Image 1 (cartoon, rainbow over the protein chains, first blue to last red):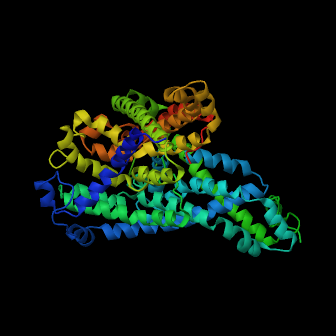
Image 2: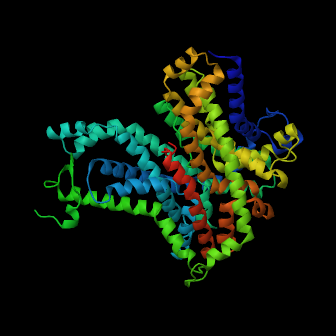
Image 3: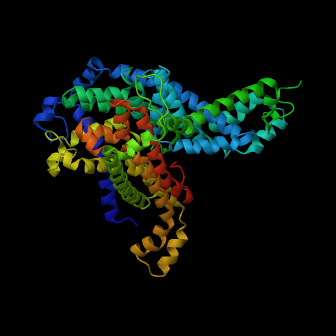
Length: 269
Length: 305
């Protein structure tokens, strides 16, 4: 049963969801002069890549991207590896404080970025390491771990324990388990968790704003500079924004292509 | 080979080996990993509150070493600060308004999606997800400021209203927040909608219920707990939002007048360098937010994933 009302509403919802971003991409292909003279037309009259060139040549965009990667890659790697380890260990082993890890990471998931950033900033400035990429990467690790842990653990729980026990009875050691059980059954899931966590880290504005001060700038801070300092150079603003959206969606699109699924949680909160 | 007691604390009946025959290196690795996990979890869950609590009881400031214990003075300062009162008021309006909007819009999107067959549903969900998933906050803000610019903004020309001018700024802030976060609600509600057995609908249809009757007697009661818990979660997350309000309001008087709590925290801690006062305000905020969190816990909220 598909009434025309459902179709109309769906089309409207798609338009509202996609329209601002579509406009961003099209405006990025216009010159600022064209945007100012004829702001109402959607398609660029004379599409140009001049703004994209200016984004990479005249702004800190490339450096910001590099800085973001320097933070996101280690933070993602450590939080996912540690998340997988902790997820496995709390499910399969008995040790003091096992439940505590569970409960604390659930609580930690709900800690807002600001509430984490404030004490970390005060601590880091006391230690004289505020304003460095290393400090930011540490903060991201702490911020992202609970999410990695819960996402990986949810999948690990579905993995039957008898599978491992059976192999061990047959004389398998850790390496065999890794090769025949864990890697094949968790590879895709761990990859998708890594993509989600990586994207959150690349997009993070709050922790970067609080912890980097006047130090190196990550991509979101560079984008803010471009907006604030370019004096309404809309062509440049839209092109840099569109470039950021395009670059940051690459891992997510890879994920969708690899798994055919679309995951919630591309952003925390 | 006897192993030290602290290593023996890891009891193990797993493929890695039983407690007795576990190799020393394996056990050492396990203990190290568990210690690392504990460090990170404590840093994420306990440290923020513990450290803030401690700083909030001192007169710590930026660029000064040493801090003296001042008891609850900072809390008194915060409570009597009219800027804090206004920030709390703004945060209340902002979080209630945007949560209501997100729940209404997100639920509508989910109800719309379940009308479609599974394949179309999955494809449409991707499109509905663009604002939440693909766009970094900073770009969201500048797209909307571009669309609502007083000179070149398309939305301004279409509606005649320039959002983000002082009188409209709270409305604009709520609209943008709903645009970003409605898909979050949509996912949770959609997951719940898919679990409702078809037979429930068949039963009320046999009793002569029309579309509204099916919604009122089956759908709504079924999704109500999800709606309440999701709303509580969203309320807490929106009440402490920093990036959207801070970036949309811009710096200057407008940000102080309309900024919610998180912007106040930033101003006090960074612009004024008053770490103790900032921490006291943050602690007070967290205590208030425990109420909806407790409610969410009662309604057994998932953590949003």
